[in-house]
Image 1 (tube, helix red, strand yellow):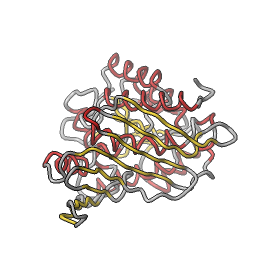
Image 2 (image 1 turned 60 degrees about the vertical axis):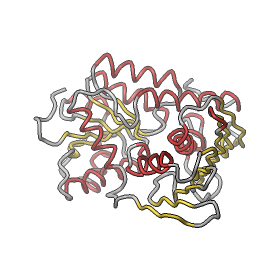
Image 3 (image 1 turned 90 degrees about the vertical axis):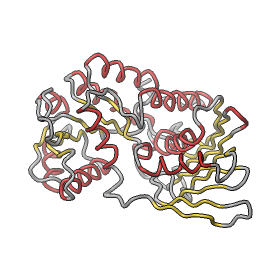
Length: 336
């Protein structure tokens, strides 16, 4: 890989042409138009040339189209690959780019399981190419705002977390099919797990019960985590119904809430009499994806192999918890 010259935007290639890929293309366009020179969208790859060309025509005129991921990986024209393929293809697709020493920003869930996650991280270290998970809430400013609030003591000793993320999305084939590593946990539960872990650190125990579809994928999950110092989390995720998306941390003198654990924009702090003490808004976003892109670019230019906001150790932690929860519920996928 030949990096763009110092001071020049890093060249991003998008692998995949689904809805999440369109959002990244939008993000990169807005970054450019707002004067942010961190990155430019240089290329898009799909398994079919016409799909890549159609995507570019609709979303990013001027980018190059590739009819395979291998072509884009070996071309030498990108510095960072955004992996937006379905879950089961993350390890193979990201692996192609890492083998060509191209850094990777891999959509959540990072991989299907810990074995795959370790494979990608090992490739990253071997080829000295950054790899990181695109769990956007880890990179956004609201993360630090929540952390600062908890550390301030304004709600006392924080002891309990609640979070729910649910959407009626069983009509999406990738969510209901084992062949795509579907289910609520990997697609939605990953967010509520990260919310609790960002608040309380590493859990010492994790348990889950779920409702499965006829194919054996989990459609609704109820997760309980326990931590040191008497702390707990009650987390819910469902692909079957609409949820409030709220996240909350309860303390001995008050509590805080965020409006959406999938993209928190408003933090509210309440006192011991349930009175609203303070309301804090996140900075205005382009799309919310810009923070992970910027941090990737900064880390790559510094020679880093991971991003500070989501280091490899945290990706492996979350991946391992999801492995444990799936094992408890007897959920497995053909690629395993």
